[in-house]
Amino acid sequence: MSWTQCPDPRPGDATAVDAIETIIVPRSRDLGGFEVRRVLPVAGRRMVGPFIFFDQMGPAAFEIGAGLDVRPHPHINLATLTYLFDGEIYHRDSVGSALAIRPGAVNLMTAGRGIVHSERSSPEARQEGARVFGLQTWVALPEAHEETEPAFAHHEAEALPSLDDGTSFARLVAGQAWGQRSPVRTFGDVLYADILLRPGGSAPIEDTSDERALYIVSGTLEVDGASFDSGRMLVLRPGTTVRIRNRTEVPCRVVLVGGDAPDGPRHIWWNFVSSRPERIEQAKEEWRSGRFDTVPGDVEEFIPLPEDP
Image (cartoon, rainbow, N blue to C red; front, side, top):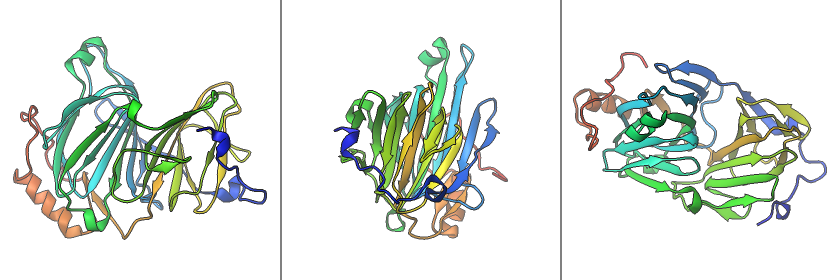
């Protein structure tokens, strides 16, 4: 499919000033020598569609022998979606999954009633000099599916729909856009696309979901004549259609996320998300007392329940 088959904004459609509802600047956090940029949640904007947590991981390069070591920890009532631009993460979880995720592939882990997982650099990556650069996002499950059975799905980059016109490339990680549909199965509408605009490239952002946002990973993005630097999330107003462009000589990478508007308020505490505060209290006690399942192949360590996350 060609980008030219996707409609441009019509004359009289919203300008960038009108199309962008909120601009979010992430906060940097040091997680023991590993820096992340926390985008969501933020005061005044807890979610975009079902996305309730959004972190940029890295880019980070570790010394030989070192690497990422996120010890086993629990989740409930959400799905984690992990996507990398560079490097590798070895994933293990309590339903028995054990594999490496690499750039362009997607890991979707549905916590449901409860799951435990770890994320580490493999021994091979440590020997070569481990690298990590990507996004870690959490999707709040619809209330009717919060207590679904835990599950894990991995899709290689080649299995995901893509478009490329020579100056613009997009990989549709989840949901549907530009006449394409991702094979990644989600509860409700979850939209996620990785867009690379080479110099002179452009792409239409259609009005296909209740809520949408653009996160600028690198480069400078132009939206209807206004320019925005990397490390910004641009939350679009519902109902708007815009065309994004790269007028610089440096590639610009953007991630489009969104989906169904929340079906009610969500509470978040540490790694737990739920529509019910009492469910989070239950999960705290279950983790404190060791009643979650363990992670095969990674049972020696775990992250204790924090006093104040």
